[in-house]
Image 1 (tube, rainbow, N blue to C red):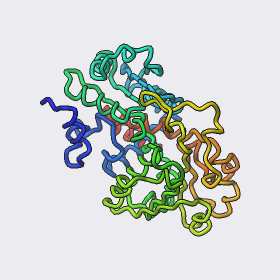
Image 2 (cartoon, rainbow, N blue to C red):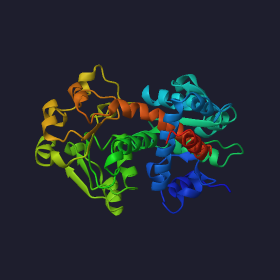
Image 3 (cartoon, rainbow, N blue to C red):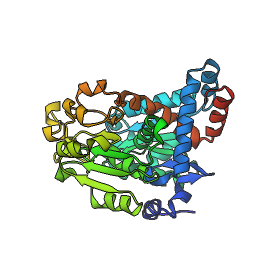
Image 4 (cartoon, rainbow, N blue to C red):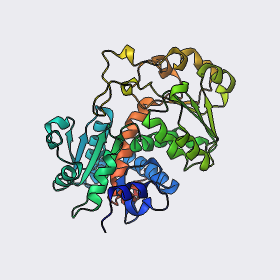
Length: 371
């Protein structure tokens, strides 16, 4: 049945209707929104990521994984600069035996000739079994999914970052990192989680907050300059889902008062590349990194280690500029590099889930005594 783009877009933002469009055979097919998954599905993907991680260290397990997606091809269409995310998707697909192609300059593609998104992704679906897209336009991934939803050859579309809107797979790997870090402390439920920095424009920060609505954290604390505080749309959504939200505009006083109770601090940089000056929806280019750094008031200074517990988890979606000094790497709860590697495992788990192989992977890990 045909559906207009406006109807498709409206439906996926309606919790009662989105599942029919974004899932097939009970599995995710189009991955566009952080809030599209249930808690059970999120926990299952975390379990699959752990199974893949452990199988990869086992000789027979590694050979088994390489057969999961053997013969499949993944197109990574990245119209925004990315190293970690693109290579993470490529590595995740590679772990399961798929081959990947990366297009990182759309000026060399038919987009530069004015080809529509619909025609472009339909063409790509002729050659690839999944399309991963990253674009500065908030709507690009949704338009790609809509075009393929009504086509004769649909393939999964996975958003790898949509403008300033969402970064779904970053939220998945961040959740996995939190679960891993809280494994012996009851998981995410009951935890105080602080998100610091540019909440208004940081899609990773907002996506994590949306994923957390599927759990029961004690509270989400947003600490940011007033101009970059979370918008009402986000905070109202969180509160409708019974999440306690606290908003603060100063980091040091909050840490001095509440630092010992916080369980995780998620640092973000000030995203000045989105300041006025970009063209055609592209982020503004800056001459040097000093233009991009956070103000001192939103830097997690090394001396703040005295204000938090040693088991406080320290995360950052990267890249970092000055807001998370290197001295924090000596903190027992610093997990940023684990967080990076978890991106590969979680994206592999997502590919496996989309392809209906998650149960087989977990079962094989159990038979080998790895879980």
